[in-house]
Amino acid sequence: EVLEPTIPLVDNWHIKYLCDLFQGEIHRIGKRQPKTKDIIINIPPRSFKSSIVSVTLPAWAWIHYPNLKFISSSHSKDLSLEHCLSSRDLILSEWYRTHWGSLYRLSGDQNVKGFYKNNKTGRRVAVSVGSKIAGKGADIIIADDLLDIEEANSETKRSDANHHYHRALYTRLNDQTIGLRIIVQQRLHEDDPTGSTLKVARDDYQHINIPAELNQESRGTEYDVSPRAIEAFYEDGLFFPKRFSRNVLDSAKKIIGAVGYAGQFLQRVSSAGGNIFHRKDFKY
Image 1 (cartoon, rainbow, N blue to C red):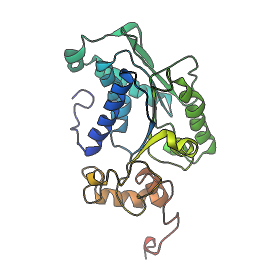
Image 2 (image 1 turned 45 degrees about the vertical axis):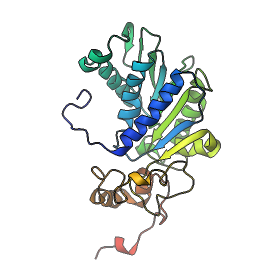
Image 3 (image 1 turned 120 degrees about the horizontal axis):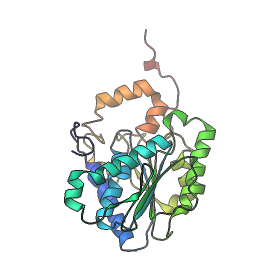
């Protein structure tokens, strides 16, 4: 009702699944308990991932631990600011303030688009690929779509995104043993931030891979969670049938092609069939 008052929420199992995951992590951090792993989430586009991770998570965390500090980043400054502002709008909404306004308040002298803090030492900083973040620290780092789909085939842009995460964001945790890093994206290339990170530090991350459908191409042994651990949630082999029906997915395959579909929807960076023409593709 606050963030999208004119659009009804279409619920799905993954919303609670991810919220439960982050709820546990926030309480762990708030209690100063050591972490087991950082988190990578690969999920199809338009599945509420940014609403969950970049917008509502910080607002929910401050209800319980208003001292927590966040750094969030995306491929562009505009997108990063949009997430940051949406989260602030939620915090300043009448609904939120009625329930939790007495727990903390935003500081008037530090309340701008890309940086705000509260009177309990909590703060949020919004950055983007290419921006400087030296001197800034956080308890939770959110890397949400560091690579733009339009630039995924650019070696330079992939390098920029990976460098931003590995060299800039990665070192910004205030406590390396307790703080949490979150990478969330749809797969775009074998050397995107997910691929480059898993290549060198697979054992350090809990990899939650959620394909749009269960089939031969979406099943793989390289994933920590998915699809086998979550396949019981799928309906007729579909991840989100109310939004991604068979017809919708079939249309997506035709429009974006085998390779694009394998990455964005199946969360695999190459199709088992390859990027080739099939007999059925030819119309007479």
